[in-house]
Length: 115
Image (tube, rainbow, N blue to C red; front, side):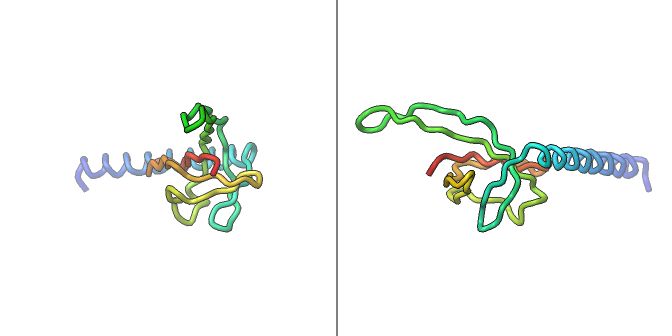
């Protein structure tokens, strides 16, 4: 094995062990502060950020709109949700209007809005 191949092997191993460490740490965090949500007929643990509230101009005046960031562990999901699908949080339906899906992150973030 050449010196360059050994360096690449070590870099890949270090990156994977860091990813595994971060994933394990995130699983602990989710175990302590998560909220159950429903998606696709199943319940998942999620960390939900405080809502971002803005005013949306509609006919007749301004209507407040709120947007939440919902973080889910990638390893817990059978597949990544799709924009337009609904999730239920504390019995209320929210529509997914954005997804942050970074392949190197153990977390998938959904941007949801009350539907």
